[in-house]
Amino acid sequence: MQSIKDKVIVITGASSGIGASAARKLAQLGGKVVLAARREDQLKTLVQEIGENAIYVVTDVAKRADLDNLIQQAITKFGHVDVMWNNAGIMPISFFEEGHVDEWDKMIDINIKGVLYGINAVLPHMIERGEGHILSTSSVGGLKTSPGIGVYSGTKFAVKAIMETLREEVAQTIKVTTIYPGATKSELGHDITSPKIKGLYGNLTNMPKLDEEAIANAVIYAISQPDNITVNEVVVRPLGQTR
Image 1 (cartoon, one colour):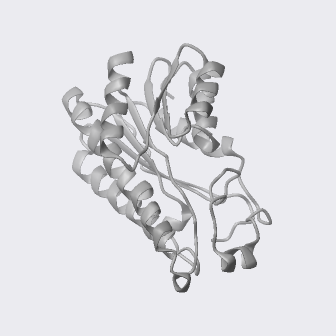
Image 2: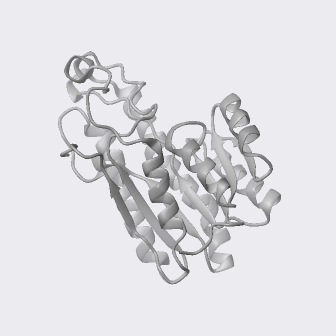
């Protein structure tokens, strides 16, 4: 596999969970990481932990200008961007009958628009360089839906469609990878307010879950392939998860 050393890797949703775990591992392998999220205190702590090969940019992926600024800051600091990982996402799942429309709007803004804004911000730079790698985090919910996850699943199916179309458009020069994690130990789902979901599933702890590092390893595998190989899709579930 190709070395990750000196690759410039931008990660959204990097303040915790799989984004933070991957940032640590990528930096240990010699990567230069640009960390983006809304929570500056956690970003600052993570950058202090990683050291000189990391910077952070406070970013709300639902705002197009923030993604444009993120990529510009990465280029200003490190000269270019090799990898853009659209990883930010939220999962306040609920049943349609509960009418949590504000939460639907937030999922659409972050899970779909955030990916589109990230692609838009970095793609001209990568096309100009004639190389690059764009990754986005979907979910196994982007492969199969089930009751209670209709809007979340819809946003993750959208990521699948966006990334597959992007791959077909830029396959000659730019790598495109979609990651489909199963249930993972992270903050995802901690913002669930639906009484019906909580009644059925509690706080989502009574199920097999992946360690964050498992997804970080999948991302590292995709990024570290030779120039002539692209890993387009990676599905990772914990043993025992059937959906």
